[in-house]
Structures are given as C-alpha cells and as structure tokens.
Length: 121
Image 1 (cartoon, helix red, strand yellow):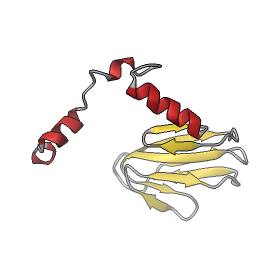
Image 2: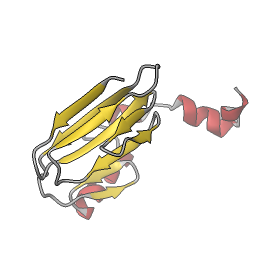
Image 3: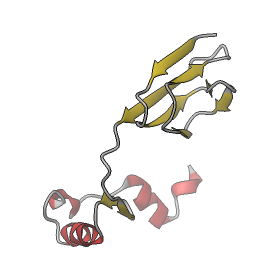
C-alpha cells in the first residue's frame, strides 16, 4: 500500500484532484474516486494519501498561499470584479483581447449536441 505525506504550510489553500484510480485521503482514509476534488482546510501541517488497491492511482495536488483578492465568477470566466467580468464578456463577443480566434472555433462536443448526436455514440 503506497503512502504519501506532503507538508503544507499553515494557512495555504490546498486541493487534490484525482485523475485515475481511487485515492484514500487523510487520517480517516476517506476514499476519493477518480475525477473528484478534495479541498483541505488551512490549519494542517500535512496531507496524507494512500492507495489501498492493486490498481494505479494518479492525482494532482495544488497548494498555494492565498493572495486575498476578491473572486467573481460568471459562466466560464473568473475575475476580481463584476466590471472585469463584463469587460471579458465584451471582449469575447467582439473577438478581441485574446479571443481573436474564437470567431471560427467550433466545439466538437457542442456541434454533436446541437445535431442531437452527442449521446448516440
């Protein structure tokens, strides 16, 4: 049973996303299946992981010192203020400031959804 323990500075924001397999997290060995996120509290010294199965498990661990800025999320966009969100939507609608190639971009999944063929595969 492979184990991993990572030291995390006090006060840091930390989360784990499981990619493949099952990962057991924390001193209580809470089982986290693939494609799930675990957000840890900010007052621990370390996080513990274990793989109790015979199958490989993969996950990413992300941790960082909080920057203390406001967060505003709308749709796929995350900014610091409502004004920045509105500017981003304006940029997206007008294909500018990083969205220049969005005019001709097509989502394969979105196209299949609109054609009604997404679930027929």
